[in-house]
Image: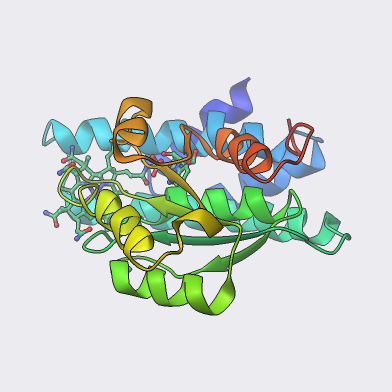
Length: 219
Ligand code: HCB
């Protein structure tokens, strides 16, 4: 669909006004928000990642594109939250692991979980393992959702699982991991209960971890 290409282009160009107007256009045309985020904006961010890796662009341009994507996603977030009427039952404690400031993906996961009936406690980014532990004790969530975007920070994920065991919390909470460098093999190796390759997958996994049936809203 041309609209998705336009959305990706707006992210690549870091055009915040355009991402916002395209998100509104998508909604007015009845386009599925999840599909628009993943096939439109996220594709643009993938291309930005490629250009960053090949040194075609530098950090400031990545930041501008990230901001443009966040602004566009926010339009969908407001829309989806407006549609959510039911009281959420299951809870997810979500955060990007310590040392890591990447939170775009985590924020998309948050939106998708919220709009699928979960109550999400968002700890933000660069969250120390100990903060996760303290919040698990305080909030008693059903799931801890952890995000990592760097090979240098995903190594804290097993530390979190170990800390949950040491605090005798592991049996009480499911652990779901994700983020670009995280693979299913890694999730299995570190003893996580679930892995989400995308936000929609994260919703499916979260539902199955807490024994809920059905597909995610926006499928
Ligand atoms: Co950043 N960065 N970055 N970056 N960055 C990456 C991640 C690199 C891979 C780029 C590269 O060099 N090839 C690289 C990491 C290399 C490594 O692994 N070691 C990197 C680096 C090195 C850095 C800095 C160190 C650069 C520097 O300062 N020299 C620095 C990090 C500082 C720090 O964290 N301590 C840095 C900074 C930045 C920003 C600030 C400019 C910006 C982040 C803005 C923000 O997040 N608010 C940024 C960005 C945008 C990227 C890239 C380009 C895109 C990441 C992204 O948002 N993807 C990325 C390149 C890439 O990934 N190819 C690059 C889009 C989202 C939608 O995908 O995978 O995050 P996602 O999330 C998905 C999915 O994984 C899943 O659902 C989401 C939605 O579908 N999911 C979960 C995510 N979390 C989940 C949790 C669950 O429980 C379940 C599912």
